[in-house]
Length: 115
Length: 109
Image (cartoon, rainbow over all chains, first blue to last red; front, side, top):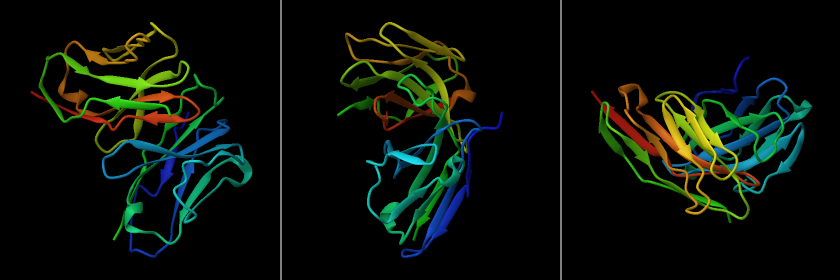
């Protein structure tokens, strides 16, 4: 079974540009999550999809961030326009059931650097 | 709100030394607790988990026990290896996942 995959692995952009990150969850996992780790700090929750619907987007920092999951399969996270403080590692995770004891499986992350 | 406090690193040990990485949590209710590990150049991997009080999670020689009375989930290993060098994250599962800041472990031969 393939794990969670993310693309690209690294992205370097200039302030004001747009970047789109992609996440492919484990097949059959309805729950998809985005997280971010900034500057070696703790990993913080951004949002949670159940299939194509946003279940919880309370962690999204501002309206420059837009997440989509059309068709309930892969998800994209767009940052437009990017700011310096958006630099960090963006992780995607997926889980089958989404309950409190359900394990989330993480992708390798996308390292975003905004110059 | 729910939170996790993790021992700050970095931690440097010699091979075969005993490892403890402290983790305490604050939560309403009884969340599931996890340890994730990130090896160099790789993503987060689930190391072990515990879903209720007094449960012990174990994997690859690592252990952690869910202690409700001390709200702790400390990670231990009796004899570390160079290959255990990685960043370790403690996490709890409430409405969403909450992570500690991560502890970087370096094991020297």
